[in-house]
Image (tube, rainbow, N blue to C red; front, top):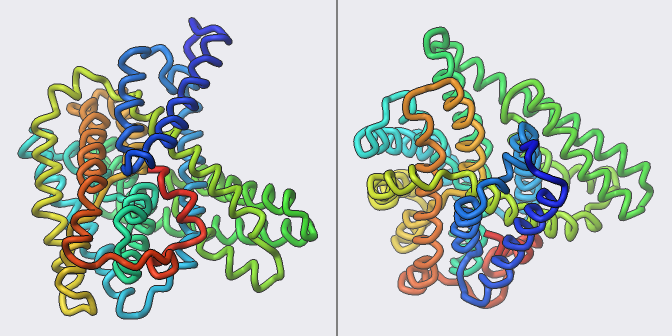
Length: 424
């Protein structure tokens, strides 16, 4: 925390961040746009006008830890939502291809564009490429709520976005370790880091589920205590995992969210009281995080990177994503128009911003050439992709004739979808 800030300054700064986030989320639905379209520029302007009130100045070294735990809660809720979205076997094949083929192609494409268009050295270009793999439910779900594609397309895109967040974060952390210690970390060590992170996440998720089951049984139907147990379980899970392996807490939280409904039904515990609570918490968290992280972006670097990073974003949107979708949906159950829409939907979200913020700070401190450009470049790509997809998703879905009926159940809606519909 900045020692020059008084208690009154800190209170005012926090009030402004929460107030701006809430205002953006209230206004956005009236403008018929995802709130992220407003949250990013609002946070950027706050950081520009009052840099002394930036979140890192207010919270110091605690800020990245808080971000990590909050993102884990967001992914836990995303995992809960996935359990309400049916995914038949023929659609699961598409999602697997989007992950196993699409993620590497996106990584390589973003790396190539960063090196050629931004002039980044290969290590930093690979780092940015890894960060830009992720999409996420915090941006995909609100855009889909506006566009209302049919249940098949919606389910595929929501599963892809939610699963890509922790996968991309793990890849980014492994890449970060390689870049940070490039002289001593080779391919074998990188693979060990990745596999180790996966194992840690699975074990931590199992511990978290056990904690949730025991706590839920002890709560004996008390909804308040049951909700507290659920939130505490997520924090314990993410904290344990991250204490052993960086960013594995995100995957652990997602796995726990996906397992929680089935386990709750098996042992007679209830999630009912916690769902509305998590919807509210996640909506607030998304707004506050985007405003806070956008405020960290240095404006002079943004201006210098704007045009070349626009080229990176266009390269990803016009060439890489359509290629990924074409490969992943080849000979699938999707119609031609459904395949086109999948190829026109790949916004970046909060995990990309949080990862760029955390690793960028460390690499800058280590004086790695080009590290200062990581967060601004990621910020620009996030802003461009969210704004473009957010404003075009509705007309594109309408033009392709793939919009669902007005009944939410026909659009593949989930209980958590309505609460996050405008959360960005």
